[in-house]
Amino acid sequence: MPYLLVKMAHIIGAAVLLGTGAGIAFFMLVAHLRGDPREIAGVARTVVLADFLFTASAVILQPITGTWLAWSSGYSLGDGWVAASIALYLVTGAFWLPVVWMQMQMRDLAVAAVATNTKLPARYHQLFRWWFAFGFPAFAAVLMIFWLMIARPAIPYWD
Image 1 (cartoon, one colour):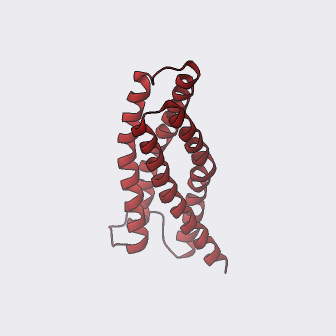
Image 2 (tube, helix red, strand yellow):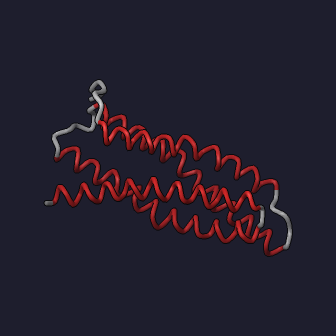
Image 3 (spheres, helix red, strand yellow):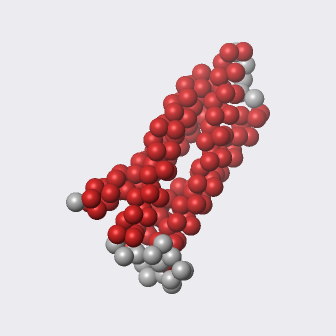
């Protein structure tokens, strides 16, 4: 029974990472395309909150549950597909952490534009381009992790 509960938590955490990431990207993109600083400020506030509540919780939960599941199932963390998943998880984190910072900066710039009744500054647009670019490798890595977890392909042992 503990194995199934931990596995359930791990699957839910993975779904939260994928779903929240896709949802955040969609809502930020739509707000950006509309170009209204007031809308961008509101959406960015919610996006930052969602990242801290949901994504960060799952980010913490995944390695704990994943390590426990691997060891409980007789896998080494160096087994090919497990090690590849861990490497991709680190890649995802390397892109996600700057994205969170960028979202906070974009939020603050949009809030300032609303307060001063001005257009979004060039810095906002620069951050958005970086934010958008960072999303692709992070999202691709998460999709690859899902595939590895489902397929468990025979990858040479890395231990």
